[in-house]
Structure formats: structure tokens, C-alpha cells
Amino acid sequence: MKVTIITVVFNGEKYLKDCIESVLYQDYKNIEYIVIDGGSTDRTLSIIESYRSQIHYFISEKDKGMYDALNKGIKVATGDVIGILNADDMLASSNVISAIVNEFNEKDADGIYGNLNYIDLSSSKKIIRRWVSNQFVKNDILLGWMPAHPTLYLKKELFTHFGNYSLDFGTAADYELMVRFLYVHQVNARFLDKLIVNMRVGGMSNSSLKQRYLALTNDYKAAKKNSLPYPLITIFFKKITKFKQFLF
Image (cartoon, rainbow, N blue to C red; front, side, top):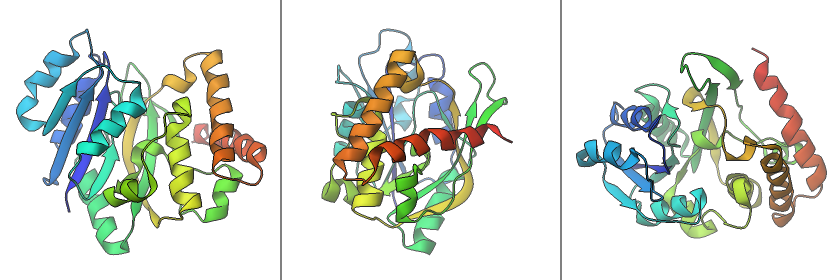
């Protein structure tokens, strides 16, 4: 099984090296690594160039944002399975991908997801939140449940059948895709009880009060677009369930 990992980046010089090396140090070797840059003006391109021989596809050009860049990566991906690793984040250990592949084979799954730690910007050893997931059933999504997007690995054929990331939902494009795949199309996604990603705190949807409001609005639009019966209730529970991630 070939696994494609896509990293999109724009002016990500501070943490990109850690991200790339977490992919290259995997003990599973049938990995296709794709890096899509949005036209960076800092040292990002020189960092990428230093690993260029180990990156299977790379392009640097202006795009319409993160999810447009992800769609570019999905279009050229040749793997059986596709995963996303943000430029600020790291695979949590060297056997993450081998464990995911083993789970795909054992469970005959369409998708695999796992656990995620939010880590401090200044220290990768300082954990701020723990996102410990579980095996879901369809109605869990109505109560605000969702997998941690950076831990979700999906068979490429799902994107062919059900579409890529929509650019109509801002930073909620990942939430919309997960609701569409898991709730509407009911793909067979299985939980792997393993730490998959260390994710640095921050992110586009939490950068300001305005962004938080837009994220909430886009979550509602995504829920409504996919015909969740009580979208306001779903979004309410989606927000409050995150509080338990701080209790560890």
C-alpha cells in the first residue's frame, strides 16, 4: 500500500524542518511525499530544496488558500491512501504510518484516524491539549463529534467518488469534508488508538475573534449543506466537547 502525505505551506520557515523530517524518518518506506507551497517569500523554499531529493512532488505558486493547495496535492497523488500533515505539525513517532497501514489491512477500512496532541509553540514537549478519540457511530456526528483532521487518512478513491475540499466553507472545509464522507456517505472509518500527530497550537480559525466567528459560521454552513437535522445543536456540542481535551 502506497501512502501519500501532503504538506501545504506558506512562509513556514520556523517549523517546516521538523514537519518534513517527521515524514522522512518513518519506518514505513512506501510513502509518496508531496509539498505544495503557496509562493513563500521567507526561507521556506531553501528548506524544501535541502530535502528536494526525498520529496516526490513539489510546486510553488500562488493559490486560493490552504484547501485549494490540498486539492492540488490530491490531484497529483498516486498513493492508495492520502493523509495531510500541516507544515507546523509533526508525525508523533517513527512508526505512525506503518501502524496506519497495518490498521487499513486488518480492518479493511476506507479511512483510519487516531489521537492528537496540541503542543506549545515554543516547546514540542509541552502538551496543551490531548484529543483522544474513539470509534464513532453515525449519530455521534449529530452531537458534534469529529475526528482530528490531521490524523485522518483516507483512501484516494473516496476523493474521486465524493469530491475534494470545498472552497466555500473557509477554515471549516475540513469539517465539511469529514461530515460529507462520514455522515452523508458513511465511509468505513476506523479508530486507531495511537498518537498520530503533534500539532502546534494556533491555526487559522483561532487567530482572532473575527476568525473564530467566521469559523463558527462556516461550521454551521457545512452542517446545513450536508443536511444535518439540527445544525445549531450540532455546532454547539462540537464546541463544548473540546473542553474535555484540557482535562488530563
